[in-house]
Image 1 (cartoon, rainbow, N blue to C red):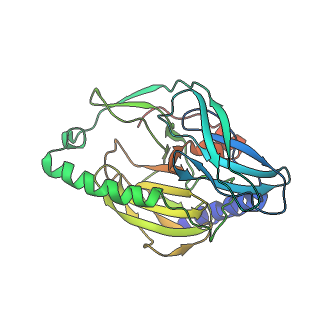
Image 2: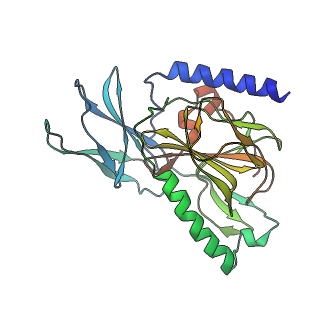
Length: 287
């Protein structure tokens, strides 16, 4: 059964990668969304674009050069500016765009382990150490790979909660949900949606067993709460490579995959990278 599931996932991923070409993720100029900024035509890459101090992807399509800019969830609505750096052939210039308001729903969850809600001093020290590892992975920008910008979900299953939810654990407010939760039984294979390189793996306090994969140009994917990790840092992966198995490690209410996508360090909605029919799937209530 697992071999059949892997074959289905690999076929879906291959189709997504083949269809993507220079297609871009869907634009949504909201907190947690993506802005596609047109840089014009030209034979050569126009130069680096920075947003909030982080380098963004610059991609050439049949419509010209485009900066693919991730918008952090805590971005205030209103005008914002990315910066196109100077090159020997052109001066620097500002790229101004407007971020619209988006209201995300609330979700209240009950966690049995109270330490996962109110960590003790030892836990807090561990969390701080892990933050540095997470930050190092999410701020990676490599040019060896150019990712496909349309992806298939790394595991089949209904979404048990959606990106951006304002979450309350045991009635205490916590950070917004920065990924997509996909409900699946423990042991379900989780596969990479695109070629890449494993940046980091390990068991984290909140995220449980986690894998980070670099796909190039500031696009990094994250897979949390795994029951088992099947890759190691530095390993090259292809679309369809098994990264691990669905589990319930870390702060969870049941087995599922937390799938997150970082783009120029901003955590953005994974649904923007999915095919429209897959992105429109109705989330299932729960955690």
